[in-house]
Image (cartoon, rainbow, N blue to C red; front, side, top):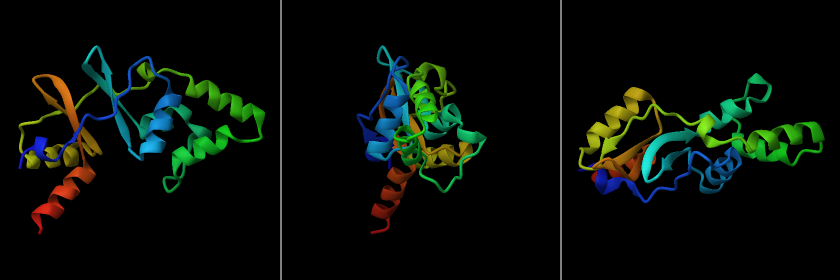
Length: 153
């Protein structure tokens, strides 16, 4: 089975000039853990939940069991004006300042097993999928789980 057979086609992307607030809204609404960053139809990086958490860095420690995006949205709605203003300022920062430029990608024609090896080796949740250098999709852990389920029928 090839990566192109199970990847998510036409992934949601953001641009380097977009705000962290936009990223937070997309990640929370779509219940995804990261977004490819594209500029001039070229993949330039990826921004993840972890990148947003590092940017916010609330009290230098966040309980991993908490849903960070619900927490951030709760803080934004908080009564404490000082905290609220601080988070609002952070949410206006640009993706370009926090994106991950070190990209691990996979070609759409590669075998599914190579994607599982890369995800495992680099301990990541998703891989941007390219074809002839252009972003064509994303393959995530859940895509792989669904493929395994199909193979198990």
